[in-house]
Length: 497
Image 1 (cartoon, rainbow, N blue to C red):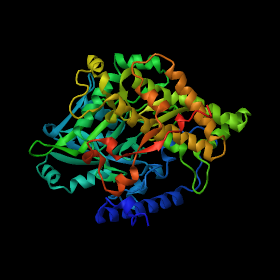
Image 2 (image 1 turned 90 degrees about the vertical axis):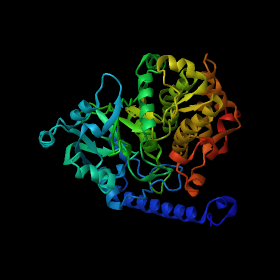
Image 3 (image 1 turned 120 degrees about the horizontal axis):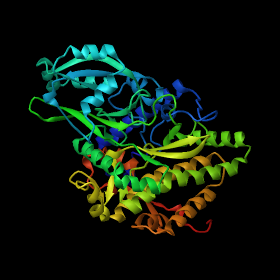
């Protein structure tokens, strides 16, 4: 019925409507399969899970997308093997490649080839096989992507010429994070983000060279003097740097973007790894219920500390705001950094269930507030170069407001209120007071706080229409706000404050 309504689907072509329907049905089937496989798993009821267990607790994908689990090129077997929701570990595929076809970049003093050797160091058999390929460099590939690449003529020619040799599976065990293309091993110093030749939600998941360069620039910013200043202002916040990447070139010297692999810092390794949970998993409701992982966590705290549940829920939300939301607003308002802090990029450190740390992932997607560029270039001269995300403060506030507030903080409000732990308006009043306290402090740019407090509506990404029209956000969108819609701003209402 929705697809037949001209007021809703009028601008979508017949082909894109069928594509939308196919993806939606595939997503429904994938969710049913994951639910059957995982059952009623409730890992937050008894303790704080480790990072990768919390990643697998996100079973149903993007909470406000019509086809969150559509993976067009994946079979069910692929999802069961490589999907985060199934908790299965796998080994990487390793290739020995001619160094003349290897390209990439890293921040000093890191060296990509040495970083790779460190990932393989725990597997002497793998190193022995690679050692037989004299003059070649060892590189890891996602096993699913490796198979796809080997079917391409340009890659097959490199194999036939002896410039790539497959040395098999090996190294430590890895598991997918919620993004699917980034994988984690508790034994590895780095997480790895792979290009995957498939479409998830609104875009194909191919890493582009300019994204990698952007990641290096943001890494230099947040790990340098500006990052030190941000850390002093926001001691709970850790930005997971992305200091290196590599890719392979074809016979004509062109970078094959579907071979790109980037490195991300991994603080979640070893037996003493700090408990942490991605916000999307915390806010996800249990099948057919109003309760969520977050409500399970709040009930556990209330039980263990003998607190009233409603009081615990409010205190938890207050702590969450100060630990995990305010730092992003400070980064925007004082440093001009536009972190895309949506539910799957915002990881909350936990101690006894309480938020105690913030981890942000996705340097490659980070942008800049235009008015701050002169200052940012004092630290990183290339900030704002072609391919970077740069927005005037007014537009940046709208984008930021969607990711951090509509997609992020409001999801926590909904999870706590839907489970009946406390009143939604009380949580919104807590949020508004937090923003008002922040607004009372000196700041370099007030656009973000003023927008959140005073705008009658908030911009929100129109995921339904983007999906219906079959738009690839990575390659077909020049103005991100063009696909946004306006929603009433509940923080603008003062009666409950």
